[in-house]
Image (cartoon, rainbow, N blue to C red; front, side):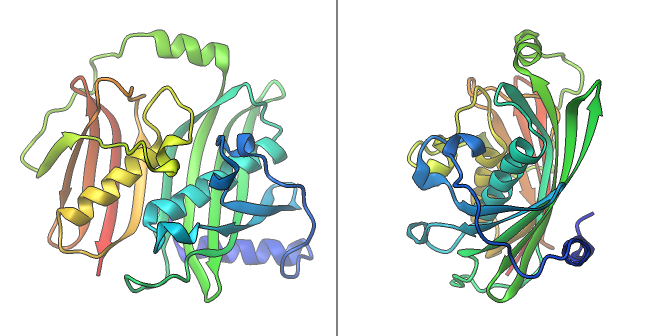
Amino acid sequence: MITSEVAESFRRAELANGVVGRPVGTPSIRPAEIHKTDPSNVWIHHAVEESPHSMCADFRVPASRGVPRFVDLMEVQRQVGILQAHRQMGVPDTDVFVLDEIALKLVTNYGPSDISRHSGVVRAQLVATSSRGRSRSLSQYFALEGPGGLIAVGTAAASLVPHAVYDRVRSRPTAEEGTTSAGPRYTYMEPIRVSAEDPLLSDHPSDHLTAVQTIADVERVSLEQSSYARVRSLKLEFHRYADADPAPTLQLRVSKSGRLRAEVVQLGVRRAKITGTLEG
């Protein structure tokens, strides 16, 4: 569960490490370090290692995108998480990040026109597991802070797979176990939309449906299908890879109380589960 206690752990870590404010002076961030190709899509800057297992960076969501969406804040979380794994864990570029789950929760109320989430500081802490001297998986904890204080807290968990192993796994046929059918609990069932014009979604080379692509469509649909103004929290859990073709189907329902439940289904098999809350 994500709570404000996560953010408090960052404060304690700063005190323990003698960090006051933010250290200054750090190498620039290359797009490839966060799995992007266009430098304009790098939203984090001035990354600093606060301890061997913690990192902070400035973030700025381009003003051209308007008021930051929930998925924009999750992209900030994703960028610093990938950067931390490469720089602090020494994960080679040849390894594949297999995201198991990612979650984020707003801890401050914002109006629909509030722009204070455009910029701030994002902090990340990680816990890694290793086997025979090689990192195999990681868990990360995040806090996004803006000019007015804490914005959101989040978590992520991923496996680190050598590319040769990844290729073998991807070549296997999908097992039929865990199949699902569209029950009456879902009120929306349509192919996932991925906008080629949105650099958040298109500038991320991948041979499968990504977490950010999924979350962007979940946010779009949930707000269109309900009277709520914004997403308060989301958790995405991947069960299997979802290929781009045939287009995976998003099945979604928002309750009267603002609780969101969704699944990504492809070829009759559930690939991902999404839960969350809406407000406003």
